[in-house]
Image (tube, rainbow, N blue to C red; front, side, top):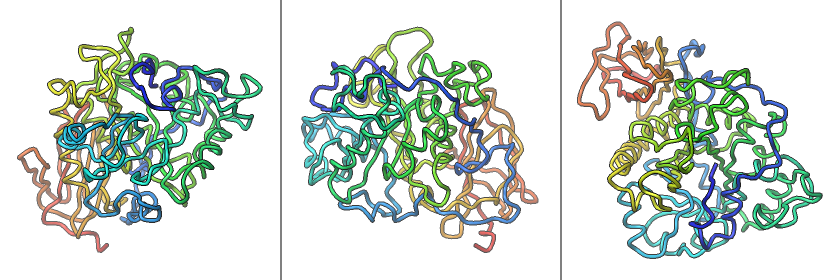
Length: 446
């Protein structure tokens, strides 16, 4: 939830909507619990993989963005790494963000220079039309502050008065329809949702926000820093809303992958749109009990959990409302705290972009141990990406069906022998992520 931010987000007509803590969509009928079973791009140790490896394209296909006017690149070397609701006023802004590995601005303050972004070789998805934009943002977190319903929209956002008429009657579907109608023709439409879609609403209610509404979607569940997310009516979705989550169950990077799975599973399997991961890069919830500043290790693990579960882009929530560096611009102002790790993560994503954009090779790897994993195939080479799904970590044993003599652990300066198709590695804790390139193997004939 993007709370307590209006004073910092001057210039954005939709800022109030983005930050509201108001909602008419409280936790009524609980959605069907979603447990990672591999459908999100990841296979957990409990999943049952296909017996024969099969190729599966990334959601909507690698050329998806090319169907929209002036959209994002379809080049396999491009992977969207975005920052949420930044202001871009001069070349110094884009230079600093680009140096950190950012290539996309998702939401912008109203006084931002979109042409400047394009001239810098970057991409923008604002809430207002602009000829230099690469997309258009619909209303943010409307599932929470307007709720799942077709009542009349008053045109107001929280803080301006009741958004729905009659007051208290949900009108979130109406708002998104009207925002769609106001968008330029054939542009990439993006929406971000919140706890309504992920926790509070039934699957049927959530479908009204997810299916046929936008072309690109995300949800912001801040598992490491949200003071309320461990509660029975929120993160308790993971255990069927039967109880609060324990700290080890809740403050876990693997839950960012759960959010990706939730959004993917709400879609029609034959018509999935890309889901982007949303990760906080600071202290978004203010100085309140049960919250903290995300650490570098947590950020890296959250990003990679999202990618392992099939995210086709990453967005950073770039605002601190507590902690030692209160700012709207974490990347620009809090460099010594989080940015070195963030830069390394973004560099790794950019380097591996062709792999991330390549097909999944489902059923090619099985794992025994406390990890989620996914397998990719690029130019005849198999890659296995894995992240811990238990706070304590543990040992995981991987069996690769396409053969191989060595697992090269990417960016760790070590290798692991593959013996009779199997190798074993240690995952030190809940933030452990290891990325493997399988050498000396094949592609299972695919």
